[in-house]
Image (cartoon, rainbow, N blue to C red; front, side, top):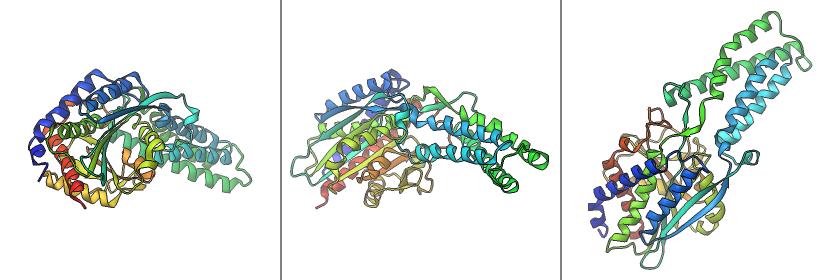
Length: 405
């Protein structure tokens, strides 16, 4: 096969990717959306990509970083107020619960930008590189990942994601309890449910006080000032993608009919804002049926490798053709993909897919592990051999596309 020489160098290019991850994580720390460190990382990544001879563009866009987690405050404050309102006016309490759910659904689940104007905006950056093919272009593939790093859980939250999930579940149960109590009391009182809670209704309300500390804890769950090193999530994907361009540039054999590109987004941890901004600017020119977008996000644990059938909390279907192709490419690279039966979270592929592009997200991490969104997400926790296999899978995909008629 024509890319066999590159595949034989997978270990070297995996080592290159790991080295670049370590350098960037150490020298551009705390890469929160719209931060100086994120801009520095974009500038450095653009330099690395330009050394491959690819055409590189860095584009600035406006982002409201607090939009990613700002709904936590609105939702939980409204729930706490709804609890207080229960003792006085049931209708007001129910209304506050409904108001609390709106940002949770719109911002937290659907990752909408509808409320972004309510937050302070900053400048973030996307970096795009494209390497032309030697002949007539028939296919095009972009490997994507994100440069920014995620906020960490507050130090008092022991257990990381597991503790956060438990808090969220108990908090949701508390909200259901309060809502049911409100409706029952409203039906009993009639009208708008006005009346100071007394007797059994007072007892029902006081039982709900056990949820107040949980709601208050969720309110302060995310540390707004600190971030992870972000080595796995998502620098690992950034520099595996960069390694692919580097390998093609250094090889005597180039894709004949397939353009290969890299998109490194900013502000992905802020509700996929970078990928959405990229799609706002470019999606129209790539809805040609010939272009594929493969998001390499958090390439950490080979045993957790998944090619996502669905994305954006299970709400967005990935491109079925691309899912199948990447699974085949992964198998050729001696990688086994686990069943994608967990729909938690989102990758940039969801934004590309929502814009009408052929996209799939590839992840390899344990959501409930002690590294996810913690300060342990550093370069020395990554596996160079696994990154080499991911590099090879990307090359296998390029070869598959280039051999198609």
